[in-house]
Length: 261
Ligand SMILES: O=P(O)(O)OP(=O)(O)OP(=O)(O)OC[C@H]1O[C@@H](n2cnc3c(O)ncnc32)[C@H](O)[C@@H]1O
Image: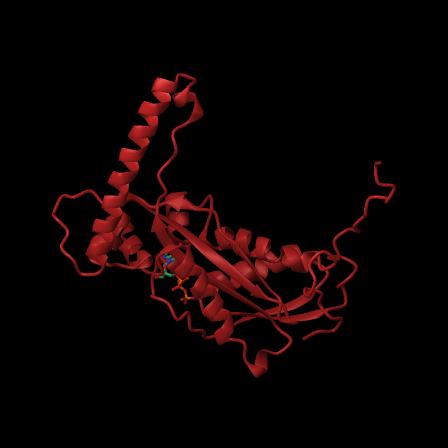
């Protein structure tokens, strides 16, 4: 028997009307203007009815200056939020952005290449396995290098990719997180990071002949001639992390109290 219960309807996001009266103080766990401006721009679009004031604060990530991999990078963003969760910030929206790099994942073979021939499939599967083994060996070599082991000159290094994590803590304590898109770093930058242990910003500066590029348009700005900038790149993920605040009726714990400050 089909159920006679009417489908549940969900109202529109509370953005414009529901939280229009709020005054929201927002603290970004960084002094980097790129991060502060990215959060301010995301908030302006996500909660247009909410008057907000965004400031930066000193924070501790508790991870390496150059976090490696999703886990460490996300942990850095969480730690940054925890480090600014102070009595003077009670009732504030807290936001942290942590930039990271990691190894590129190998591509799986495309279905078009595999076709329907079982012989071909087996051959491709074997090739894929060999490719994955080679990549794994390269990863281990690169890690050894990072940890002070010996890297043979001329050994190709695995490619690196760049991303960031955004963590948001609502005034009531509920947290949300989102990740930026990923882009591949040029081999010249990956090499400086893996072989010489440079941070991304320093590797950028060396390759592009800039100074403090991370405070400007960032790596993505240099690689896209400004089509994207580090700020717009972070703004997108910040907006995604703010989704529960845009829709508090769908995400318990994210409602902004009227007049919260
Ligand atoms: O003051 P904080 O908030 O720490 O700002 P930061 O620029 O150091 O930012 P992260 O700690 O999040 O970034 C980790 C490292 O990656 C570098 N980085 C990340 N994204 C970058 C970008 O787009 N361009 C240049 N450097 C970048 C950054 O300079 C750090 O060395």
